[in-house]
Length: 242
Length: 180
Image 1: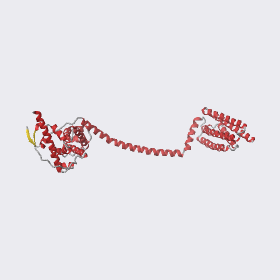
Image 2 (image 1 turned 90 degrees about the vertical axis):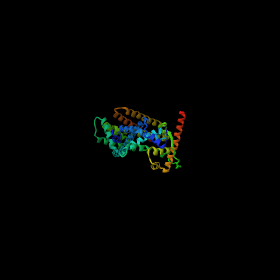
Image 3 (image 1 turned 135 degrees about the vertical axis):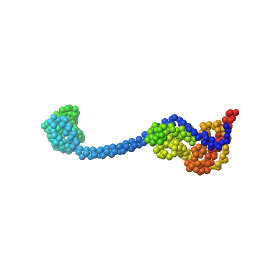
Image 4 (image 1 turned 120 degrees about the horizontal axis):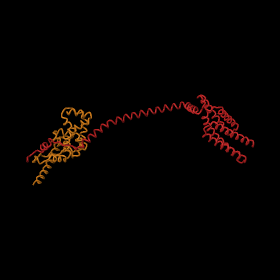
């Protein structure tokens, strides 16, 4: 039925009770977003807490690290002594006191310095090699008299002595080669020295691998002693030759 | 369950209560969205976003006035906010055309058709028409809501009605031709 109608009234009447069901997935979307919002609120709190925890750990770690470093810097000798003491105790049957180990260490380090000085000056002065020889003999006596607690530190010292010895020999060789390059007899001397060095080296290698190295060191020392003696004799000969 | 109790549960983030409120309000609010939006998809987006705001601000609802009215205002405000972002309110006022009466067979016009021609209106015409004709806001209120002059609001309403009338007449004449 047609009738004249204001357009406003037409719409008002038509939309009066207008309801429309939204698509079913709308609620799923809303529920999902609501769930995410809850999660989002939790995550920042965790981030904050973890950030605080991380910074505390970092600062704490730095402080601990610094204090630990200071401790090690203050007592380096003491710690080393303990380590050596433990090692010697493990190796020894006759246990020695820490004090005696300390003594031997001090003694060895002094010896080491003496050796170095003597070796350096030995290049020019042959008389000082006698002092070195005496030192070596002292060591030998010490080992033979049963002070085995010095073995490990002594062994380390031996390495140093060994390297010093090599240097010494090299320098001696150079020295001699420069001085007596034209002399035929010198070739024999040099070759002898080389032989003794080789012999000593092989001895040292076997010394490393052997279990009962106490005797080995003593023999090694004897060999080293012999070689030094040989050198001295040879040098004396050469000096006499001139 | 009483609506107040549901609202209280919703403010405690109770998902079941939220779903119940959604089921209760969604048909009414979706009809609002359909009228105010350009199309069905946009209406769906507006509904979803509006419900998120409703659940977020549900603890701000004071029991003065109906909860449905409060929720509806949130939907309208959200939609207007979207158009404000798009700067659809910039058009300057035009002269108001004379109002005409429409001769029409009431039953021949479907609700779907009317919804469709409302959605096809330019954004500002659609908003003013909806606010004034279907949701009972005054021109003064509309001018404040959209940030336009009262005259502009009146002009926009008149233009919206002309467009709608033309479309209804074309549709009716098409129907008459078809029936003949």
